[in-house]
Length: 547
Image (cartoon, rainbow, N blue to C red; front, side, top):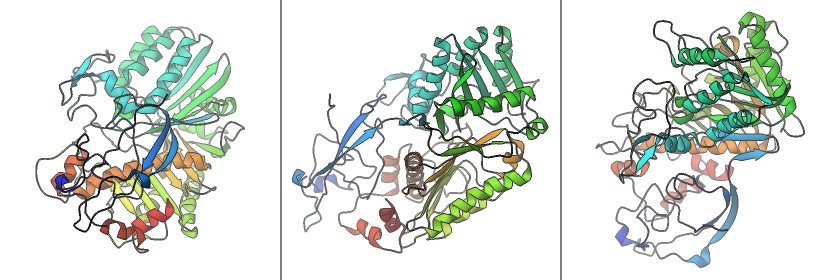
């Protein structure tokens, strides 16, 4: 059946709504009262309508141009001018490949909502009340987790439940951070049934004999209950065991694998912006299974992995079910690491030879790390030859939009940092590490040769030489578009907050609409906002032509 329609809401509103045609049943920021002054935008169902569980279905979007009279007053809505389009809204799936994202740290409940109960209990009841929202309504940790973990949480927990519920199945896990209570509970259940092996990082961030880390506590609980073939191995290759991987088996046969940037932790799922890929394909699963077995047999030794046939080669993942893709598994020797990252940089620079070439990326930290990728991405915004849209928690300098310039954007996902002028703290200090934890680069998303680089690798030379990681390259326009939308949503969001930081001083606001009012930003009453979209020397024009 069809659900009742609604107007999308704007971040900006008119300074004096009473001077314009308004629908009294809608708030001032509703787009019927405050039309979008953009040529494109990203709609996220559930932000303002539908509650915590928005419908996945075909959405029909109706778009209507709005006009002003000679006095600058907006005229009533004229539905005869409307156009419509229908878009399938839901988790990404293409044959055997599924793709999912977290929402990152979003104030859906309250500004100071806790992400776990007080105390240091390893396992806890997620159905306990976490707090109350502005309306005085109680919400649970489960409510928070479902919202912020979004489709990534669904994929991870869905795979765990698949294994738990079918006794012929077993699971291998690569884990870096491990602290999410539902994930740990399921792994312990499988340990008690002899159906799981875990390689768990033991670098100092995750291991301390004097003051045990959550990973140390989990190891202790695992060993208490483990039976049969269940086993847990601690290790770190050269520096970190940095993969975040599941390999599912039915009997002795690998059947599917999960990879990506998402750590199996509270931070990874509910604070960070992250992604996972699920390969429902026996051949791809077998590749990941062989890597796990090599690491397991070699006791997570860098030297032994470097001596295996799995490092230093590009492994084809393409099958009838999986789009054109390949993967490399580190640690690598320096020569291969340099080549792998160099090939990525060459693909980035090749966009400069294309009409409307584009590079979009979300990479955790561009300020630290060796190799060719970080300098290339940091410098990308300086040219007008490539439409560049990038975000990093630590970008080592930012480039915001300026009218009359074609240079690209490089924004920070940590606007509380010192790289921006005060009083920019609309997004409060998280105290949890990173907002942007992705490691992906999208080249030419709107062409047939679209390419995405993604998964757990931080794209730095040191990591490729020292860490257990996987770097996936996918050449598929649909997959590239999904990642491009994620990049656009993140850059638009933080570009808005970064720019509003220079507005009027006042009490910090947690949401963009309030931040806009504080900065003195309101909708204009002329067509002046359209001018940059037709100025060939302005980034907005490149944006319009690209999309």
